[in-house]
Image (tube, rainbow, N blue to C red):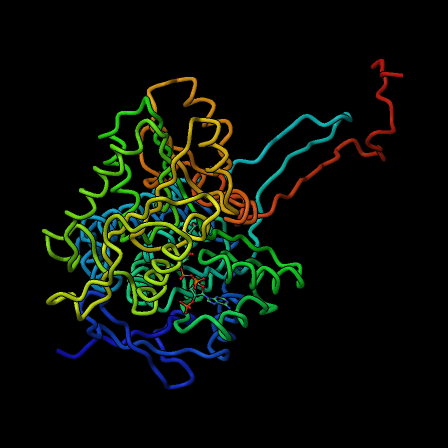
Length: 502
Ligand code: NDP
C-alpha cells in the first residue's frame, strides 16, 4: 500500500514545500515508514507567515462566539474520529492505545473548554475615580502566533496552543515536531473541515533548526508559544528576547513522587509505575525520581522492582502491551546513555537497564522499564531529565529532607506525595516548588481546566490550559471614556462636594 504524503497547509491549500524534498515519518515500534513528509525551508515559513498576517485582520473582527462555534465543530469531529486518531498516534509515536485515546480526549476537552471562551473572554468594568468617566479592560489578540510543539502529546499539546490562540482572534503558524507530522495534519484537517477561514491556521512541516529560528525571528510573528526541551527553549528565548517578542515556554521536568512512612505503599506503587513508565517515561510530568522515607524504602523498592520487571514491552497497538517504544533511535540512545552514567556515580540498576532487542522488539526502539537505586540527590540521574522509562530512588529521613531533595533540581513542573498525615500533606502543598502538586496520586494526569506549567527552569512564568491560557494569547487593553465634556485629570482634580484625603 502506498504511504500517505503529508503536505504543508498554507493560505487554505495543501501544498508541497519549496524544496521539493521530503523525509520519512517512522513507526517507532516497527521501524517502518508510515508517511512521507514534505520538508520545508525558510521560504515556506515566509509564505505561511504572510498568509497568517493577511488573515489575522479579518479573523480578529470575526465575532468571538462564531470563532467558538468553529471550535465546537472541531471538537465534534475529533470525538467522532477519536479511535482513528488514537490508532494513528500509536503508530506514529508509539504510546499504547489507551494512552493515545487519552491524548485525543485531552485535545477534545481543551477544544470544548476553549470554545466556551468565545462567549466569555471577560474583562473588568470598574468605577472611575472621576465623575462621568467609564473604565474597563478588554482582551486584544496578539496577532500572529507561532505554535511550536513536541512529539510526546501530538494532539493534546497543539490544541492547548492553537485553540486559545484562535478563539482570541489570532492567526497561527503551526510547526509540529518532525516525529509527529501525521497527527498535526489530522488536527489541521479537522479545523479546516470545521470551517476555519483560509490563512487563519497554517502548517509548516520540517525540522527545527534553521527553519525554527527563522519562524521565531520572523518580523511577522508576534508571539512564540513553545513546548519542548530546555535547550531549545532557552535558545529561542534568547532570539525572541532580543527582538522583544512575546514568548511562552513549557520545558522540561525532573518530577518526583515522595512516599512517606505513613503512606499506603501499594497505592503509591500504582502511582509510581503509572507515572514513571506510562508513555515510556516520555511525559514532561513523568516521575523520574522516587523519594522514599527510610522506614518504607526497602519494601517499596522490592515491590517496585517486581512490578517493573513484569511490565510487557511491545507494540502499543497490541492490547497486552504495557509499555511501548521510545520515539526514535536517537532518543533510545540518549535514554540508555544514563545507565553507565548512573553506575559510574555509584548507583545500582535494580531492574531493567537494557535496550530490548528480543524478537520483534529488535526492529523498534525499546528500553526496559528501569529502576535505579542507591541514588544520591546530586547525581546526574537525579538531576537531569531522562525522558524515558527510567526512575531513580532516593532515600530520605523524613518530610523535611524529602521537600529539600524534591526542590533540589533546576526544574519545577510536577510532584506528588503519598501520606495519610494531613499536616504533612499541607506542608508539602505549600513548600513544593512546582506548578503541579498531587496528593496520593502520581505526577501525571493534569486536567485542562486548571493552569498547566512549571516554576524555575521548567518555563518562563506562563501557564497553558485553564483560564491562564488566555493571558498568553492576548494583550490587556485598558479603556477610559470621559463623557464629562471637560478636561479631567486623574490623581489631581478634586471632585466637587466630596471631601478628599489631605
Ligand atoms: P525539542 O526542543 O527538541 O523540540 C520541540 C519542538 O521545537 C519541535 O517541534 C522541534 O522541531 C522544534 N525545534 C527544534 N529546534 C528549534 C529551533 N531552533 N527553533 C524553533 N523550533 C525548534 O523537544 P522534543 O520534541 O524532543 O520534546 C521533548 C522535550 O519537551 C522534553 O525535554 C520534555 O520535557 C519537553 N516537554 C515539556 C512539556 C511541558 O509542558 N513542560 C510537555 C511535553 C514535552 P523538530 O522536531 O523538527 O526538531
